[in-house]
Amino acid sequence: MAIHIKSAEEIEKMRVAGQLAAEVLGMIEPHVKPGVSTNELNQLCHDYIVNVQQAIPAPLGYGNPPYPKSICTSINHQICHGIPSDKRLKKGDSLNIDVTIIKDGFHGDTSKMFHAGQPTVAGQRLSDITQQCMYLGIRAVRPGATLGDIGQAIQQHAEKNYCSVVREFCGHGIGLRFHEEPQVLHYGKAGEGLVLEPGMIFTIEPMINQGKPDLKILPDQWTAVTKDHKLSAQWEHMVLVTPAGYEVLTLRPEEAGWESRLQ
Ligand code: MF3
Ligand code: CO
Ligand code: CO
Image 1: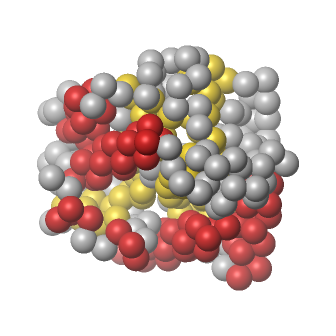
Image 2: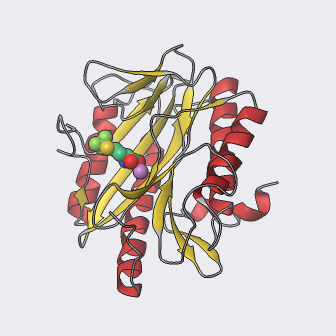
């Protein structure tokens, strides 16, 4: 299967979908506090996506076994695909909320880290390093660069900070389908792999562990957790390759000027 190069019309619809997904993360932010359950966060996001945005929460019923909720909430040592439940957040918990919506047939996919109340020093540090990894990966995107350039930028920054890159999950092409080609690895070697072209849209969504990279999947068949039970963090954006470089389709207002803050 070839990689789909998006037309101008498709790119415009992906911009809309990306912005809607980003807005869900902004909407949920003030609700992420000690004492809230991840089911309550799921319900708020579901209702906002369906009733306000008139969009579809892509995770609900996705995959096999069908994913049972509308967002993913991955707390502390959970790496990704954590399933919302009646469990309540405790002060200092760090969690990733991953939102994917479908609007007009097109997917918008983005995630970020949150902290319930005051973050722990370790939680804040890992979240910051992981966000920097994502931004460094995005900054490597331009026509003529390769997927290996993105992977190397992410891996180097994680390992320089004595953290590790999860290997079992990767970024992905996205559009009319949730997960399209190519696979975007968060590790690799510069110059290797697919050469990027304008009109490609894919996610960059590094999962970075405080300890070893190894994971296991819980009996619910979705939740991935670190084997050593140390912390994991993830940030995700959806990126368009443009003639000049890249456009982040899921950027939030608070991120304006991120390039100048990245050393
Ligand atoms: N949003 C995730 C990603 O970034 C995929 C979640 S699949 C689900 O690719 F079924 F768990 F929602
Ligand atoms: Co994704
Ligand atoms: Co996602």
